[in-house]
Image: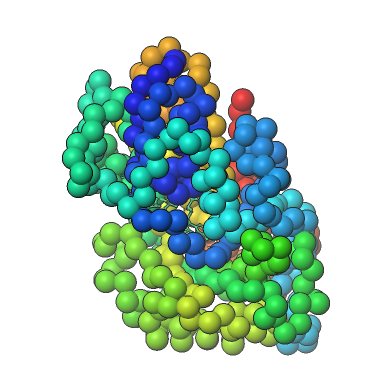
Length: 407
Ligand SMILES: Cc1cc2nc3c(=O)[nH]c(=O)nc-3n(C[C@H](O)[C@H](O)[C@H](O)COP(=O)(O)OP(=O)(O)OC[C@H]3O[C@@H](n4cnc5c(N)ncnc54)[C@H](O)[C@@H]3O)c2cc1C
């Protein structure tokens, strides 16, 4: 299939990958609408990509070695234990074949790969989308465009998804992720923590994940995420009951005093001293909060509207596969375009593959969320064998880091 006009809503990871996919798949005119003006402001935090998923995305042409990364080899599991010293008691160790990325440099590299023939329109918000059987309309402050296909790459609060599937939106999972990152040079003693180690520090009702990411200038940043449920009466400053309100988050510098004080309790009382100090070294403007949500759209396409990335599916980040899934969506889109002879066939091929993949990742996220946050095991009683058995049950089909890309 060659030709056609494609509008992409959102110019983040999924939007840039969609532009590459549509171009390689043969679309004639491609426009990306990104409501943020200029370059997207990154929060300087990280994401991880399984080595096998990287290899697939590299061979499909969506990632490559020029995108700055840090290689991880193993993950160590620690629990607080006064007798064991500052790092805590090491319950066990597992292989961890992942590469880590800093969102900002990764996005810049993807953006750089979007061909010059694609019209990228920063600072233009899409106000409405009207899907139809033969095309779709896209409305901005500047007017209305008629296109053959609208790709919704507009994130977890997607307006494109709302136009196609009214009322489908992420649901609150019942706990929060505090996130932070800062230059490695701030660590008082980096020695006990090897660069190739990802660390899981576990406690009853949650865990902390720590790994290094590139800083984009040849050095490293410390990147951490702490998952736990807040006390029921804590003032989150998020506008009411998260089960009822629209999905939201708190930007860097925006934590309420109650949230900061709960974080202080976790790093002082629940984490071993070394890891507590590592979290404590984060300044307020390097710290932000994301309530955990999950959902998947009932289908990835509706008429001439197609969803990608977080607009289609948000799986809890325990899966280690959010950005991977967005990039995989793009590879499937490219081959659906390239092999089909008409729009309905291309959309059907994409939908069949990605709807199943999205549902599988949401299931995995829920299973891992139960195991790692909601129904944590008696960590102190576990040893290497118990840890391995527990992880095998939690991971189920072994899709941690993302499902294999069928090609
Ligand atoms: C600025 C930014 C920084 C991020 N930093 C990190 C990070 O450090 N680590 C991490 O793991 N994840 C980060 N994420 C999230 C991560 O990118 C996603 O979870 C994942 O990569 C899938 O992304 P996505 O492209 O589907 O959605 P998103 O990254 O959420 O992108 C959606 C894009 O659509 C645009 N948009 C939304 N509505 C409209 C509209 N009506 N009209 C036009 N444009 C619209 C938004 O401005 C945004 O750029 C970040 C996201 C953003 C936007």
